[in-house]
Image 1 (cartoon, helix red, strand yellow):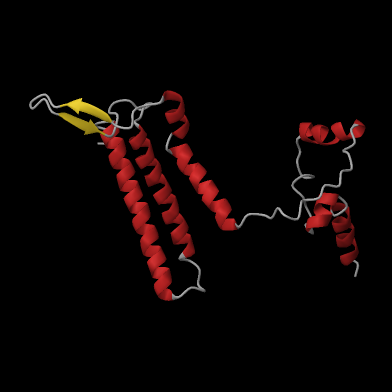
Image 2: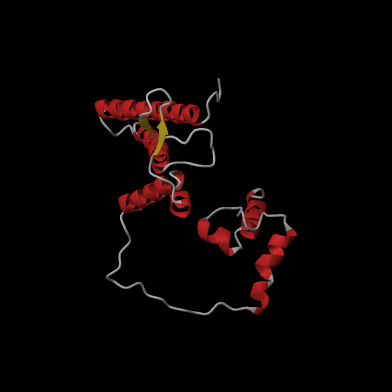
Length: 186
């Protein structure tokens, strides 16, 4: 009995803060910071400022999007960012380039802008972005393969596709880099 009383006092001291009382933890990350600037910025503004009491209601016609919708938007945004969409909009490079064969004088299309790391054709960015997205989807499929509630054949299929997607993505991205920068990593 004597050993339980001091334990209760310690837990009562730590659970007195509102952050730890709501979460049920004995220690909160907010109160355990030793940074004096953090405590100053946490306390000082609220000593003279009071947040207004606003009761906002979400309209009943608006509902939260499904998780798959959010995932699709995040994946599409990721694809646009890694494809260089912003660069394509600002610089307006051509879709593909062309080079003239010195022997036959025929004009051949070129997808990768060789020798320039900070420049790209539109198709080059889209194909590189697709490889990055394919690698990310492969990791997601490998994670889904770990779910033991799925049938064994489904898990094997998910794992196989995930591994194949990651390997293809890596090999193609390295090939793209070697085309872009001749002699890279040789």
